[in-house]
Image (tube, rainbow, N blue to C red; front, side):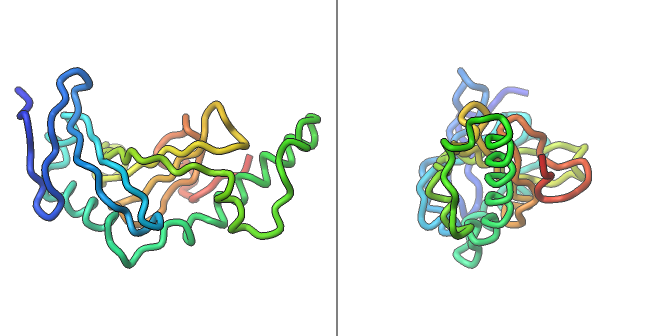
Length: 176
């Protein structure tokens, strides 16, 4: 299928096609669920073909809702991942490089939330649209951290940058 140079998603706006990357990219938007973080969406051309504008638009609209607080919802899972890494670091002799955090909310001081929001579609995941956010974090500088939102608003995975969209056991976070 020949890609369109631009598509418009109702309620969201225009996505320009970038031939070099074979993907559509939006203009920057503000994400209330991440405290007003600005970033853009992107998706491969085949995602648009498979999922369709309506499903993608619904997921983006949910992701941009002012009624969701992604940070509050993800905090216990991100903190657990941090604690697991800290334990490994202490066992392997590099744990002193990771601070002891007195409150779970402080984990976000060690995370840089990514400003690129990948729209993903795959039949193997129930025909849902997911939005994947890659983050940098101080405890795993190689792979980072991913946050995945089913339908754009329901946190379904907190994992490592190289992880799949969903954990095999269906949990949000699988301990190390």
